[in-house]
Image 1: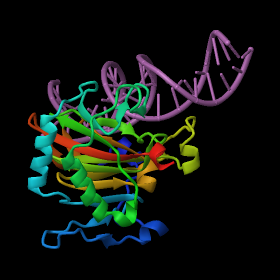
Image 2 (image 1 turned 90 degrees about the vertical axis):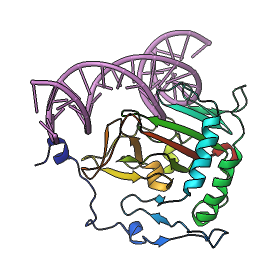
Image 3 (image 1 turned 120 degrees about the vertical axis):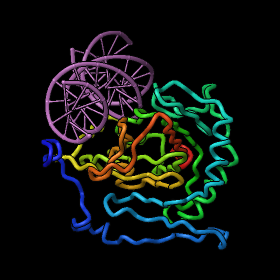
Image 4 (image 1 turned 135 degrees about the horizontal axis):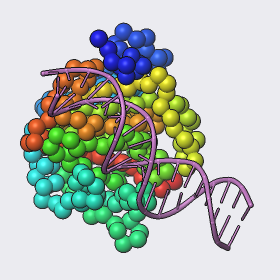
Length: 261
DNA sequence: TAATCCTTTGATCGATGTTC
DNA sequence: GAACATCGATCAAAGGATTA
């Protein structure tokens, strides 16, 4: 039996005919990392959302511990309901922009993140090219009800790729498809975005130690959200139940558009 | 030029639906 | 029936766009 909400919601299924862009789906490791003796993660293009790439087990358990240790040594910002850390450029949630020239500059990006970034660039060089990622935000989601409301990452300051490394615990990210607008329109502050009707919502499991890259449609034509729910579901099946001990830390890398100009 | 409206990102709350 | 999940409405803040 389906709920009213579910009836009106169109969920993508494996059986759906892929778009021309999706037909080009390929499971590729875009570039071989320097060490050939370690298990090489695969960067897979997602079937459902153009521009979404996921690499499971992108980092090792040892790297995860090392990153967590580094994060826990640092000072947290408790301005939001979730705790955050900003590196490279601080993001101002009130003015919704990045700033490093008004006395609120963020600390430099820690070495352990730069090392991760180097591995990302090796794995995804064909996708991200020579784009420099100079801003890092660490978000911590603890307990049973912390999440982030649906949104599209700011388009005026941040570049075309959003890169997320998940640490600690798994989560589900929900993608809400928006009415399409051109990338030229996106940089106009006045552009109004609405979800497509009937709504298209795609659930994606982000497992710990995985890498996610949002580009193209995944970056600009979908809102993403981490629901503030006790259970995480994919296609209505519970894949994770949060307890009070739940802790997921995400490390998000962004490029700064003013750097690209 | 000043006032007003609109935008984005994120938070909160209430109503309604679902599950156990 | 209680607890939980989902959805939509509303609000905040600051800057940009529009209008008078």
